[in-house]
Amino acid sequence: MTEDATVLHVGGASPYDVVVGHDLLDRLPAMLGDEVQRVALLFPGALGGLAEPVLETLVEHYDVLALGLPDGEQAKSAAVAADCWEALGERGFTRSDAVVTVGGGATTDLGGFVAATWLRGVRVVHVPTTVLGMVDAAVGGKTGINTGAGKNLVGSFHEPAGVLCDLSLLADLPEAELVAGLGEVVKCGFIADPGILSLVESTDPATLTYDSGVLRELVERAIRVKIDVVVDDLTETGGADGHPGREVLNYGHTLAHAIERVTDYAVRHGEAVAIGCCYVAELAVRAGSLAPEVADRHRRTFSRVGLPTTFSGAAFDDLLAAMRVDKKTRGDQLRFVVLDDVARPRVLAGPPESALREAYDAIAVTDEGERT
Figure (tube, rainbow, N blue to C red):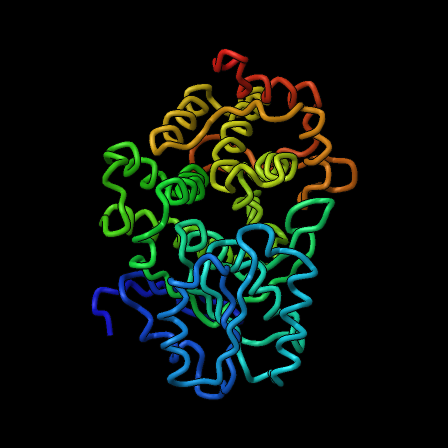
């Protein structure tokens, strides 16, 4: 068993461990438990090579049903979920059996949803293969699928039995995907852990490879931020003393999800989050709560790791329409998580449309590629 693993415990009603390190697959059977007989292994078809060692580990202990999924957000549909349910039924999966996901955030969301809904809930262990999956989708128990109206509008809370963040699985991750995952990491720095920002600002981005000690520290710090939030507010009912609670994890996501939807997910999630964070920083400046220098720091920090901070791929009216079906919207009132300063988040409800447009103008680019 790997000796250098970091075990991050998630407390609450359904406690579990998030293990970070290298070569962790030997821990998988213990996370699944002794009662499990059948395991459904869900993975994107394009990641068959990465799923193979997980499959080899599982078949030594269980009757395994391997289910290949479409790539990316295409997996997160009711039709794909229904295909998985049918396969589980045909194989005779019972409430004591389990699901294992291998893949990025989309696979985790879909696989978690299948586990949450089969027989009203079976065990699931996530083996994320992207930075995004490790720091965001695999931890916290949120599951979901997309509809034509928007992203993650159908879903449930279903905490995993464990999460294995095996950094060795990032070895063949395309650089663009690794960089996109850092969008969620930097977000965690702004909402809760300034140490993340300091690390990013003092590290040569070219050294953030899968075996980098700094990348590992960034991943662990971001996971700790999420754990701290979800333990106090699993189902997003709100935090204490004006803190947004779990909603804080959606910093930048209102615009990000709108960008993903209107571009048919051509923009990666972490890229959209970086743009969305810069947008809400500009919105907070216009609301009079955030110093312009902090908005500038958003642009510098996200761009330092290679993430976009501007956007011109859609008309604002189209984005506004998409934002109005965001999960945080209450009635006709848009809600945004904003900052009063680094690590000082709050909810801004019902900002005037003029401020929304001005903030978008601040991150838009002209035909010459310059910010307006």
